[in-house]
Image (cartoon, rainbow, N blue to C red; front, side, top):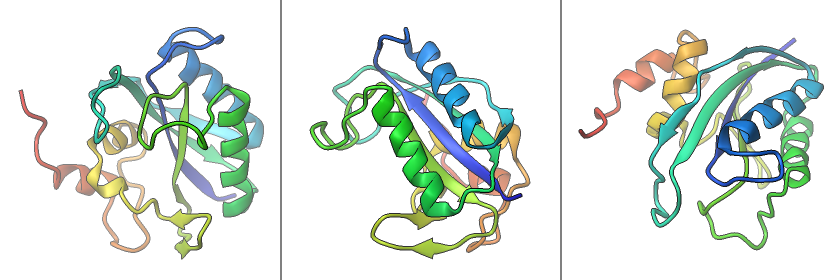
Length: 160
């Protein structure tokens, strides 16, 4: 079965609890879509782009699944909605209870109006690559041929 790499993020409290509780609830729900093989530590990160919002908690997980790319993406969006995220009314990159992004799905490379795989910005995002490198450092980006660890090593160090 293909292995999907999924990024998780949260920066708002919810009926599930704090950011930590949101990520745990989301990971549990993602587990209904296949077999969770690994979950990273949770990383506190500053918001990017839209900076006037609370700090994020980010993580990554590996999911072994029989779902195809679009089916998996739709299921992740359904989990977001069920947990209280409304992508239609919220500002882009704004505060959210939960964010689930499919980064990689095996060696799938595709670009449709609904889904682009691999995630087009994953190689630029430390908040995505650090947790993923913890659980899948040798996972390969199917277009660049770079491993997750190599992509992370090419990023500028975090200031401070």
